[in-house]
Every structure is written in structure tokens, then in C-alpha cells.
Image (tube, rainbow, N blue to C red; front, side, top):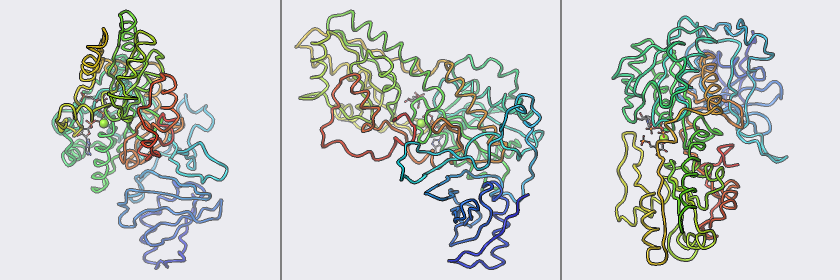
Length: 534
Ligand SMILES: Nc1ncnc2c1ncn2[C@@H]1O[C@H](COP(=O)(O)OP(=O)(O)OP(=O)(O)O)[C@@H](O)[C@H]1O
Ligand SMILES: O=P(O)(O)OC[C@H]1O[C@](O)(CO)[C@@H](O)[C@@H]1O
Ligand SMILES: [Mg+2]
């Protein structure tokens, strides 16, 4: 067992009683920081870790007040930053550990280096210059040598929240299979009907038999809902039922809900792990490359676009207009357009457009019909909402139970505007196709099924290893544990000044609807590593 020694900080001398106190609080944390970090001291509320390998001080930024700070940030040489996730040993003194049962698992024992090295982290940014700092990293997901749960003591639960997404059942299945096959867990509960199911419904037992073929079905066998997040009642229910592992499958709202559940669990000092699995067909969750369901949704959207194309090409001045999901982020519309090659114009929430006058949508439609005799338009449901509100002279203040803005039907509105505009100019045949729920109510395709499996297994490994308060996610193709605050602080959006949108514009040859003066530098509300803004 490595030993760890407290050293005195140059800026603030720790008294021996302070040092003892800090050692009690942080001592068990240090082994998990990895072999490089052997000594520590305190500097104005920051934990300083001395990096032995590089012989330079590394800072673990953490409020010393009962470790209630949200952030665990380790910095290292050449601008290295690790945005780490909480761990049981941060707030539970000397929690017992056990050898990982995978050591005796026939499937894994033959795998070389199956266990993840404690020092392994994944960079958020992989395109760098020779003089770039090493930048932000996240902890690499995967099984650890030692686990913080005795399998016989585990009572796990799974809940699905928010809208439907292809692959929900596969994730449920793979969490159950991962816990059962890899860790020998026997008690797994399903929470029905989203967050409110914790306190308003009975649980159901999940085992290998119940989940055997659920991955072939769309939807979620557990049911889902919006609203109903009552933190106190949820954590009371977790405590009353003796649950010690909570797997939350949901979108950005659900991850916010998971974060407050975790905070309440930590405040009560409970040994309960909370892990989020990101569910986002809109691809509106930041940091991660993408999650399950997106690929299936884009594939399913092709059917609607194909139908629109067939209709458009079969009539004089035919226009096929397809509305796709995407409340705040237009990734589905952008990728469906790029995949199809039959689309003449793609409109998304991130790219403002206008209808009338030079450079406007009507002018472009007129031009394309003259050139080709038909056209296909794809519009994301969140696009043009400002124009719609203006023309209806009413602002959209209606919200769903979770507080998400309820959108007006931009597809119907724009269809009518196009028809009205061309009414006296030419014969126009516009067919409006709204596949809405059809792209998300289907089972996941093969590639999303693999994605679901890996996310579920990574979540299970992280929880068994004692990590807590994290969302599991793919960052630059590697699975990582990301602290909740990074997942919930903003939404991922298409960055229209990035290459991907330029590729789309050059593929459809549509106008950008932007004057040069309107183009600002990206505000980094999205478009970080991965996130499909390559
Ligand atoms: N800030 C928040 N704090 C606590 N709970 C929240 C918060 N935001 C949303 N929730 C809860 O999370 C659940 C899901 O949220 P929401 O309906 O926004 O869907 P989502 O998870 O964002 O998924 P999607 O956007 O894909 O439909 C709801 O039960 C909601 O009450
Ligand atoms: O009608 P519901 O079930 O509230 O869900 C609609 C929303 O859910 C999503 O599919 C996923 O967030 C959005 O694209 C869409 O706006
Ligand atoms: Mg959401």
C-alpha cells in the first residue's frame, strides 16, 4: 500500500491539528488520484498534490469545508487539467473495498490490461498545436482492480426520464446484464414512469429473464415522464427502499435532476451512487461526442426525406417539406440532410433565416424550382420560432411539465407562407411531411445498440468502483466519467461558424441567410470537443 505524506504549503503553513483533520478528510482520496500524486498540502482551501513523476506541484481544487465543493480539479504539467468526478471516499471515511469479481470472470481474465489504470484520462480537445497546453481531461471509464460494493449488498435501480429515444430498452437491458454477469448483483429494481415513480409508484424487479428481448422494442419498458422531480421525496424513497446504486437514463433535464439527487445524497452522507446515462436524440448534451439513438433517428428521418423527394419530383414545381425533431439543436436535421443528398435547404434553430427580399428563403425557392423543377426542404422544429412568434403576434410562453418551451408548429406555418407567397406567381405543389415521433419511437439500430451496451457497462464499472455523481459519455471516441456540472452547464448546439455547417451549405448549395456582419465568433455555447461540430 502506498503511503502519503502531508507537506507544508509555502503560502499557508498548516498546523499539525489542521493537517490531521485534512488527512482524515482527504487521505483516502489520494490513492485514487494515481501513482503520480504522492504528497499533499493545503493552500487557502486548495489541496496541493505533488506530482512525483514530474516533480511539480499539482493542485486539486476543492473547498475544505466538508468537501461540499462541486468541483474536483487536478492540474499538472504543461497545462494538464483533470476535471474529476466525486468518489465515495471523498465523503465517507475509509469505505471498505473488495477485489473486482471480474478478476475471476472467464471472459475478462484473459484480457490483457483489462483494468483501467488509475492515471488514465481522456483529453477533451484532440486537435492541438505544438505549443498548446495539454488542456482539460476526463477520467477514463472502465473496470478498476478494487470495487467499493460487496455484490451481495447491492440494491440497484434504473429510471428513464424525459422524451423517448431509440435504445432506452437496450440500456436498461445492458445495465441489468452488466450488473448480473460481471458483478453478480442480484437485486435490481425498475422505477416506473420517470422521476415521480420513485415516490408515486411501486418498483418492479428486473432480472436477466425480464430484460432478455426488450432491446428489440422501441420506447422504455419502465415508462417515462416529464416534471415530477421532488428531490426530497426521491431521496427518501431511495433511503427507504435501501437502494445504493441509482442509474438515471435521460436527457439534459434528467441529468440536472440526477445532479440534485446526488447533492442531497451526499448531504445526507449516504453510500449511494448516482450515475447518469445521457439520452439525447437532439444531441443537445455538451462535451460528449454523441449518445445512443441519434444514429437511429437520422436513419429513420431518411424515410421521410425520401418520401418528400418522391412527392416533389412527381409534380410540377413540387416541394417536399419535412419537419424533424430538434428543439434547440439542429443536429438531426443537419445530419439527415448531409446523409440524404436530396435536400435543397436545411433550416435549424441555430441559423437564423428570413423569408422575403433579396437573399431570403422565397427567393431561393423560386430559383431552385426554376433550375430543377422541384425541391426538398428540411426544417428542425425549433427553427424560425422567432419569425413565427412575430407573424402570430404572440410570444410562446407555454411550457411542458419539465419547463421546456412548447413550440409552435413551424412546419405548418412555413408551408402556408410558401403557398401564399407563390400563389399568384406559379402553380406550386407542396407536400408537408411531419414524421415527429416516428424517428424516436423505433428500436435502436445496430450501431446504437453497441453504443447502448458500452455506455451501460461503463456506468456499471464506474459505480462499482465507487465513483459517484457522474454522467458516462463518449469523448473523442473513449468512454469517460464526466462531472454533472459540465454536462448541465450549457446545451450543445450546431456551431454555424464551424466546418460542419459549411459542409452542409456547400452540399445543399443553399444561402447562409447571414450577412457577413452577422457572423460572430463562436460563443462556445457548443462546439467543444466532438459534439459533431468537426
Ligand atoms: N433543473 C432541474 N432540476 C431537477 N429536475 C429537473 C430539472 N430539469 C428537469 N428535471 C427533471 O428531469 C426530468 C426530465 O427532464 P426533461 O423533460 O426536460 O427531459 P430531458 O431529460 O431533458 O430529455 P429530453 O430533452 O430528451 O426530452 C423531468 O422529470 C424533470 O422534472
Ligand atoms: O412531445 P414530447 O414527448 O414532450 O417530446 C418532444 C421533444 O422531445 C425531443 O424528442 C427530445 O428532447 C425533442 O426533439 C422534442 O422537442
Ligand atoms: Mg432536454
